[in-house]
Length: 266
Image (cartoon, rainbow, N blue to C red):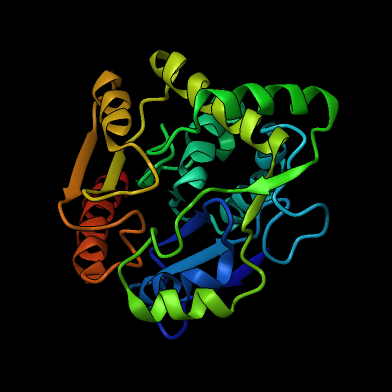
């Protein structure tokens, strides 16, 4: 777990960031810096099997292992006695959705922000690969296979693409158990939409997402019966809306949503 605290001004709140599949905390340097400059502490860690964590790369025994990793981050955020904002990107968005069902009420964030949440995959593997994957999940769950993501499909930012090509910490292969758990979690998020908690929600979605199926994101969002929800799509943006050219506009919209809601909370 890492903490980046506000300097030289009173903090307005605490952000807990949950990153996506294959990546880790260093890819959020710009977001963290912007949040600090606008008066928010930031807490973040690396999810199991990714980044600086130990254990088998690209593997998870069960999706709830991610909940156990994120819970201490939420506990640390609550210790500041400030409003807590949870920001989940891609698979981190899926984690952020599902953890609301199991986390203690005292640890629920005041606001939830989702960046291109993984509520459906843009490119589903062909049937024969899915059949093979199911068999391997029973017989050899830790076997790793290429993720199938096209290099550079996350962002149009050439500088970010260049840094990613040199970063050996990024996970390129995932286990068949990971894939099985991910697809099961996606289904659960849709099936349990009726019990999603009534908290302010802002969804930020890339209009040209090559990783997550934005139609499934919209389907989930439209099914939500909560008082305060907002969806914004940036037409030409790839999957990582906070790492894509024009990210400043995304950040300002996110900040505006947070500022207006926290003003009411206070």
